[in-house]
Image (cartoon, rainbow, N blue to C red; front, side, top):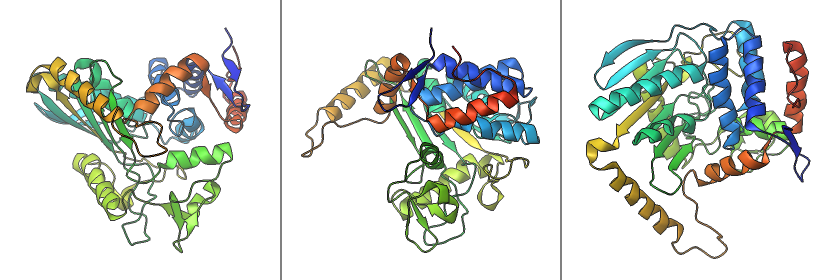
Length: 360
């Protein structure tokens, strides 16, 4: 079966399996144990499947640069360093972030099944992809998830300042439903995640006004000049405050980097990033009948979706619905990958000694 298709806009598309296998082969070629390479590749391909193209295969060259430079531990001993009945701190030993956060989420689910709620922090982790990959995981256990992370480079100054002491610090919430798509919020505390800036650059597109400003306070539209300015927070001073709190919870609380200690992993491939994340898991059964809760969420979702719209608005969307629709569409029609990225990956594939992405 062919793994490559061409869209009407001449953007090649690939199956999930093609992306996953290519990523797995690339990571394994660099010495990552095959089971670890498989787990990371599955999560990275899932990111592209749901439309989070700033956190999927686009990150592969960067990850491999860090692995080759010794900036990521290929054989980490992920372990719990602090623990009580409903909390823990997981030390990732500088392993791939996808592995560290997956360990933390699994532990939080296990603890929440006993205590009703659990909070698990990570430290000495790394970039782990889109937040929603992890807030969604408790849903299959009749639990809800809240995820927080410190971004892997500072692109946000304090409100009114110019020193970049904060990052995009994302938040995600996964709320289960009975019949409708789950409610899944995944947002940076900046107007746009920096991964979206990277994706714009790769596709040769300009940024919309309102994403970034330069150091004179003027709109910055060229993603290739992003290092000349900084991202804007959502809601002005409110977003700045939210980014600060998320960083304190996901970073400082667990002993991870925050503020000026954050390593810019876009520029530094060697230093240990000590990235921090946090997952809060709540067992619905601790509050009553999970099915009743999920049906109530369905009812509210339908009320919102069918509510009166402003003129010119075709549809009211719920958080996560567009990603859900992309999962279905990309699953059947293929995942679009920018031609420039495909060319870069296939050039690198030669140096990695693996088959190109276009292979069947």
